[in-house]
Image 1 (tube, rainbow, N blue to C red):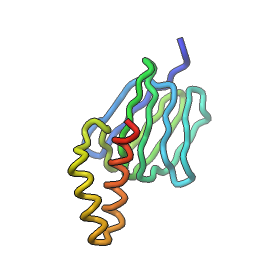
Image 2: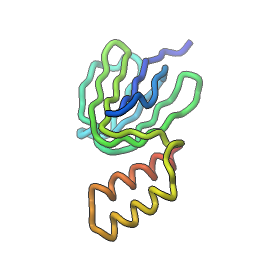
Image 3: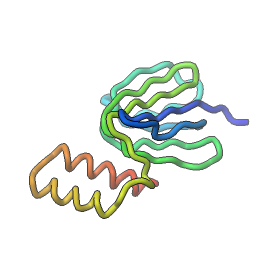
Image 4: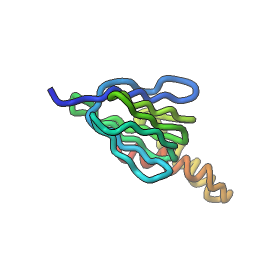
Amino acid sequence: MAAELHVELVAADRSVWSGEATLVVARTTSGDIGVMPGHQPLLGVLESGPVTIRTSDGGTVVAAVHGGFISFADNKLSLLAEIAELADEIDVKRAERALERAKSEADAASERRADVRLRAVAGH
């Protein structure tokens, strides 16, 4: 059996995903980071971006994450996000409308959130 790490993706309002994985890629303030079993302990600040989880059964889970923290120790990875949505939960049409509205209103924060949601769906 391949080495695994236990992953918990939690948003402020709910548990989003939990399970075993072989790789997790997330965006931090220091850049993109890939975490595999046996990685050195870490604590970082998450930036808005897609998080990709390669599950132990060969599947892929993608989520749009907006801010929060990432920590890893003893083969346990915690992603504590302000907001997180699984790609298959995202309404693409709604996200596209939100992106257009944010662009027309020059709302950079809303534009970034909508863009991350659409990138998560595209990566799914």
